[in-house]
Length: 269
Image (tube, rainbow, N blue to C red; front, top):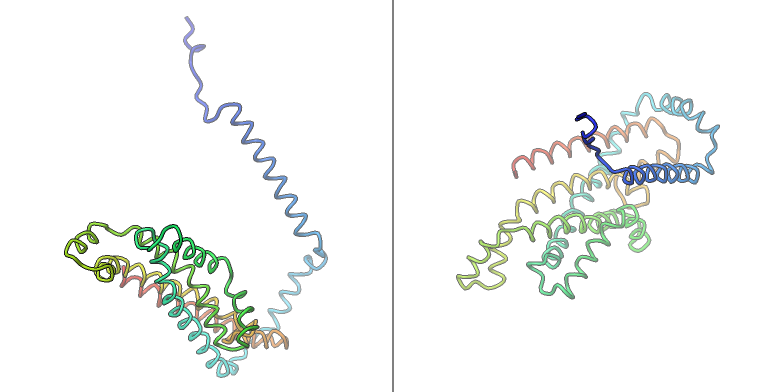
């Protein structure tokens, strides 16, 4: 008896599944092709072909950087650091109570209060800080205040989401032990919940500060203060050596903030 005819061949997918996968690939490629056509329908390809030459020309105009311009950047750089720091602190102060209201195990009402807290978190995360800055410049006027509030409003969603998830994952036995001593709700929060989420709060806040340093550098492009104001002015006057100097300062600032964040997170963890 020929045993080879009775040997079963193992397949990852059935023929029907193979057909569905093939159809999915065809539809995906068709969607990508259509999206590319929509995105490039107004593209002037002669400009695209000339882009390397233009980039090389601008790069040559940037050299050497205007090192004397550095002295004029110290105060805008200080404004940028203040926008990021104060915005992060303000956003944290608002995000902490919102996170407690959004967490299932600490909210006073899962039917009424929690949905509004989650809505605030989603709204904050949905709108970019540059858009917040545009709106706030129109409301508050140009300046650092608009930048601080824009960074704060953007930070609420980031910090609030990560924090309320950490609150929902706390050890309930510690909370039950403190509750058994007759402690009130405020004492349970202070001694049973907050100590468990404090490392997460500190780590998330420092991480968000690092992100806000980067976002604060461009808020000046819409009038929200900081070093972005100088960048917008240099770009508007085609002062390429100053632009290059600004890019160097921004890059150095981001590198330093990244180093500081890494050191702080190492100590926290």
